[in-house]
Image (cartoon, rainbow, N blue to C red; front, side):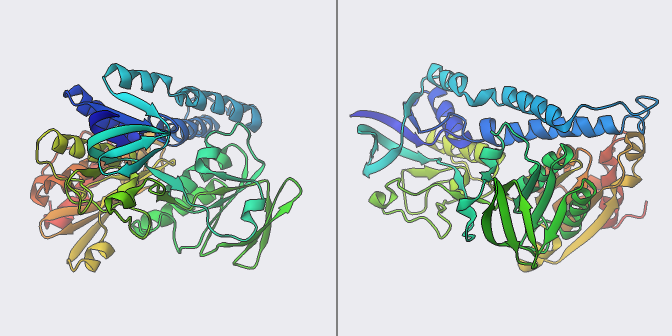
Length: 458
C-alpha cells in the first residue's frame, strides 16, 4: 500500500486546488477522481455557460446596433440554428472539448499522484480505488455535488437535460421547459430564448432566485419576459408524458404544455454517497452535506477535512477555491478559519444580478435591526452612455457598517466587488461615503445610498 500525507477525494475546484497547493509545499498527495480534473466548472458548468451567455449577448447587441449608433441601419443576422451552432463551437473551445488532459498533466508535473477511479474509505487511514489501497494521514473530501431530479410522475420517460447535459448538447430545441428559477435556470432560459427557442420557465416559489432580494428578483423576471421567456411563478410540474419526440407536461396552474425538451435545474445535492464515511463514524446531514468547523475540518474528526459543494456553505466555484485555501493552510501548519459573510453570488444574465451578504429580511431573522437604501442604476451617467436602461442597487446596513448588497445592472457582477470588500472588511459607512468613484462609471451608484445610510445630507 502506498502511503501519502494527504489523500484528496474529488478533483473539482476544491480538490484540485488543495492538492496542488500541498504538493507545491512538499507534501505527498494523492488525488482521486473518477471523471475529470477540474470538476464540472471548466467543462459542463461555469465556463461553457458563460461562453454561451457571451454569444447570445453579442447577438442581442447586434440586433441593437442601429439603436446604439454602431451602424445607420440594423444588420441582417443569420438563422438562429446557424448562430447556435457557431456559439456551441466556441463554447466547446472554451471548455477545452471537455478534455482534462492539460489539467491532469499540470497536476502530475506539480508532484500530485493522480489516481483515476472511485475512491472509498475501507478502514481508518485507508482509501481503496478499484482495489488499489492508498494510505493517508489526512483525508480531504471534495467530491462536489450532483443534479437533483424532482420526483415528477413520468419525467423519466420524456426527453430531459440536466444543466451539465444542456451545456454539452449540440442541438437547439425549438421549445424548452425550464424547471427551476435559480441562477442556472435563469441563465439558460435567456440563452435559449435569445437564440430563438420558445422557453417556458416554471418555479414553485413566489419569486426567482430563491431568497435573494425580492425587488432584484422581480426585475430579473421582467428582463426574462422581455426576452420572450414565459415566466410562471408559484407553478410546478405535476406530470410528464411522451408526446411524439417531445414531452407533454401538466402544470399545477391547470395548463398543459408541449415542448421538445425539459431542462431540470432544481438544484444539486452533495455527492457523499458510497464514500465509506460510516467507516469513520461520519454521518452526512439531511441534504447529504458534511458539517465542518470554521477550519473546514469535518465535525468530530481530527484528520478529515471537506471543501466545496459537499459542505453546502455556498455552491460556487469561488467558495470551493476559498475553502481549499483554508484547508491547505491548516494542513501546512497554519491556523486559518473561513469567514462566509461576504461570499458573492452572481447570475450572469444580461443585465447581470449580483449580491453579497444579507438582505433586510435575513437580518431580521437574526434579530438584527437593519436599514436599507436603494439606487436606480439607470440614473447614472454611465447608463446613459451605454444605452443600458435601468437597474437597481439595494444596500443593507446594520449599525454603522454594510452587511449586504444586491444589484441588477450591466456588469453588476464586477462592480459589486466594492460591496463585497466593504462587508468583509466591515468598512464604516462614513469611510464608504468618502470613496470617490471615477466618472462616468456604474460604481457611482453606491454614492447616494451609502450617504443615506451614513446619515449624510451632502
